[in-house]
Image (tube, rainbow, N blue to C red; front, side):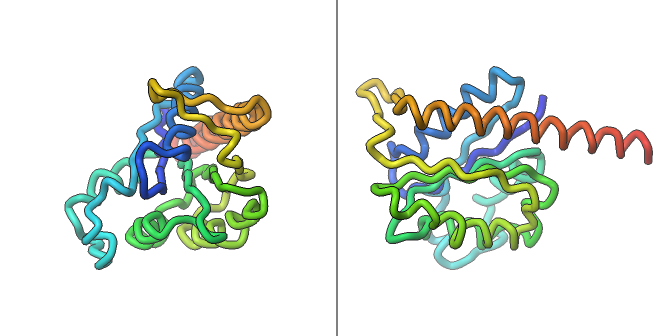
Length: 188
């Protein structure tokens, strides 16, 4: 089974960004893609703040990232940028941690005015980490995402369709990438 790592960059829980990742994980599991979700807020704050690259707490997230064929990064947008806790985590990853992986950014925000924040703030960092196959961002305004009393998520019809479409594209890209890797392995 192909592995996907979903990284939740929200400093709070429950959060809309985490709820979207849970929703995405369910959709991807229907396409035989195993998704692990990590929440950077659960990592030791001291390790993130002091840039402890060799922290034992980072071993599992780094291992999950290494085996993943695709990565979904979900973040709320605060003051026109992705979260500081996500930035602190990304800074602790190996230099080319996203090389050869399909990457899907997902962002949430209070207003559509911050839609381009992912383009000018997050995507350059992802590129610096080696990402070359970055899909179009799904940006959802907070009012399009409702967390129900039971913890489930209710998405606005329009954002739900966009998310399903991009997740289908993501699954196809990941599977295509895996097929090429297998062909290269057999040829070598």
